[in-house]
Length: 182
Length: 323
Image (cartoon, rainbow over all chains, first blue to last red; front, side):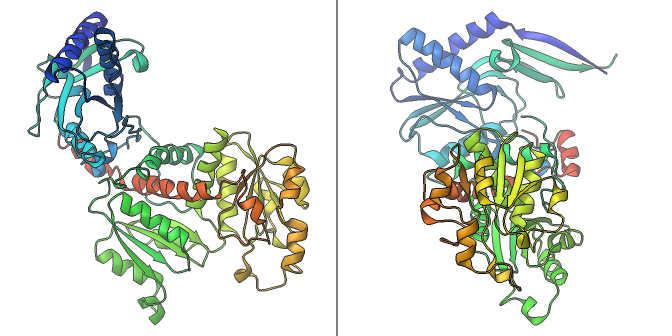
């Protein structure tokens, strides 16, 4: 069996997609008042940074950005091996009454987002929570849907969607990794 | 997410761990500190797990620290002490643990007056066992919280010069510190009266100072141990006043040091004996941050021992339950 890779979005396509998503976030919230963008560790945080920078460039407003690590809220501690490294959760202040936009790289089963909602509820009571994802690959196991989607991709079971970001991977791209029998 | 070296079933001491495993615990403890700063100091990670704190020796801070760690991870906890339990009626340690295990517990935190008690128990029950101090052997979570406190302050462990001062003979903290510090690349020394040094101390790869002034001049940090008067069945020192005069860490002695020396103490302190109050409460003391770090380190240990059962990981890989 070999791995076959296909680039779904290259660096410029990622940039264009994030620009559109940033615009949709501002439009959906009627501006940037009360807006907080929260990225899910790890790559969701870098994507959230890019979206905040794009909003800042177009609207001249520095939207507060937070980071959420959902590791301790996963529902599968007993089944994960090797164990994940716990990352940092940092919110830019109280989220009570705020419009929080959760940003993640890939939406798959929905369990990560369930965990993120549980964690956010421990920090306060936002007025509204929306979900923005760069890639929606389908395959949900929970009734969770995104509000803002960069790109929908039909992915076969067993295939993988890798979102690469400059800060971690040295380049910006979205790659579909499929396993094929030769 | 990255792969991490597994710790195994139990945490019995720092001697059996590699430097990588010790670093894994310290790295994991780092984000756990933030949970104790939240308004709701609780995450659901160990929801449904039951932890029994078997404390056969008196302890306040270690037991409370473990209990905070367990509760902040949402585990259910039960405290058992020897007085008031079946142990006082003659039940053996293994029978006590087996009975508790029959009630479907997941983890046991044990403190015991006999060296090796934690290992003895770990070999006989399936639950995870965490050593919270066994006789004069080890106190691994205290060693880990000392390492975390040093790393917080100096941003490194490798190359640090740490001197453990005082009653090394009776101290399980000293042993855990020596193993942990050396595995992470620190230079370690001990200082105290020869009567309070183990015979084989030279074989542990540490420098031995017999004068506290020399130790202070050499060290970046002093970990000052309590004189364990309750364990002293013979005349190890002439008197407490004499001990303070020769080995006490005082402000005057620290002021003569060539650099600022960080002060650690695992507590409880005998003020005016091994440490003076103006040192314990002084600007270079990290005694209270040690206590704060203790909760984070214990959360990390509970978390790391709880996760990743291989047989369930296999079924997860087969397509069930992974996020």
